[in-house]
Image (cartoon, rainbow, N blue to C red; front, top):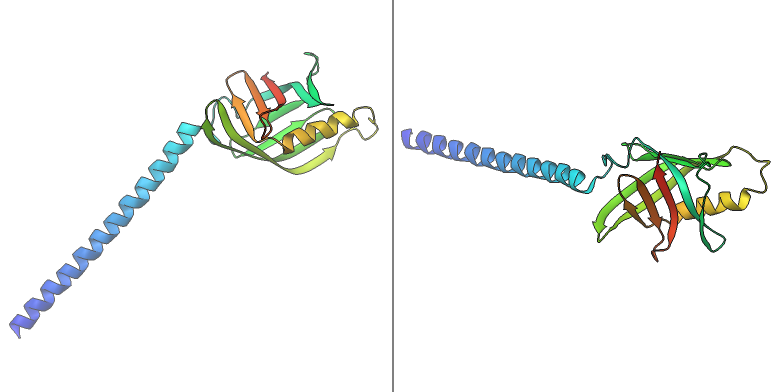
Length: 170
């Protein structure tokens, strides 16, 4: 009887120590994944890029009617603002847009980048002269696949690396 009780105690101890080791390994793996995710967010600036979020960017150039049109420096109604929660607000004087954005890994000087527009509101429906510009502005957002990002300038490119939009920091 003593031997059976002793064997049961040893098996019981081994079982719980194995279980504890498995839990410890699982906890270690979760911690490692969490640290890797945090490192990734810091390394690639996803959502928390200090040069991108919580600043107002003013449109300086827009691909329109087959070429890049440089805009007047006094035209400050075309704006873009990114938030750290992966949302953005944009306006061009005719329409305003809300949506989400995603910035991916950097390859050479380009980040993979995309916009998802969730709301479009026409601010001035009587402006028929500006309608082609408004459509080009929206088209350029929808076709953005890459971005060059620095402290003072944002450049958004198509999948063929055609410059679509250029914003400067206000």
